[in-house]
Length: 191
Image (cartoon, rainbow, N blue to C red; front, side, top):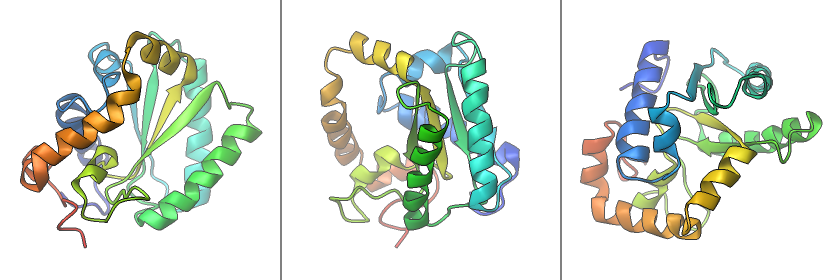
């Protein structure tokens, strides 16, 4: 799978595959299956090739999510393969995402989670398999409703253990298992 200039269909298919096989299949996010099965995930591929255009798409999608009935659209995956391909620039952009949420007075209403093909947690090496918990086929901003997240966390009694369980799952899976599950660069190949 090429990370540069994919068609919308390629980006959507790769992201759906990742969501179904990795996020749901490995139970990396126990809250994802419910909204996926109910068809409440909105997938949007941005044509943005610069940060300004992506910010405009982000603002549009934040308002579209707010306007939608939660039982119709509960969460949005804003996939943006044409911009923020480098992880460092992606991380810097996340500061702008917080500014947008504050300026639009959406703090406490919506939040944005981040996924990237080269995701690296601050306390890990680049090739650590545990980074895969936040690695997606393309740079992706995940727009979530705070109220839905609060309900999901309340329904999952051990929400604080999700991170640790994910690390154990990914270590057991290993690089070869990840490659089989999610074709594309594995942490040990993307150096």
